[in-house]
Amino acid sequence: RTLLARHDAHFRLSCPYTSQQNGKAERALRALKDGVHALLFHASMPPRFWAKALSTSTYLLNRRPCQS
Image (cartoon, rainbow, N blue to C red; front, side, top):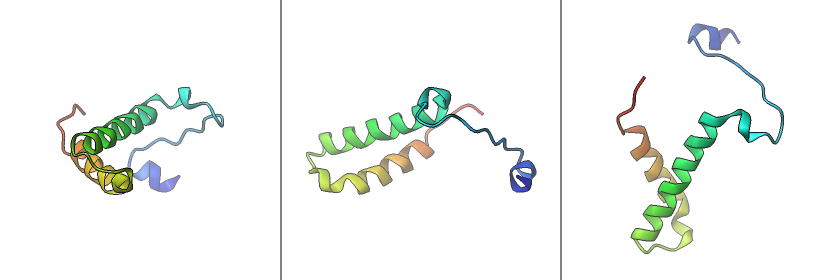
């Protein structure tokens, strides 16, 4: 918790199996999943390339402009 305070981050617990309580994380995961599916589909790649597509999707999402 000291590390979190030093970086002005907050620690909050949520109930197990209630993804509704963590909307930002769920939306980020959805964006990654959608990106993976789009990359694999448009490249006509088999599912065994899922890990590489996830890495690429993460890279692309981390470089898009966003508000802070």
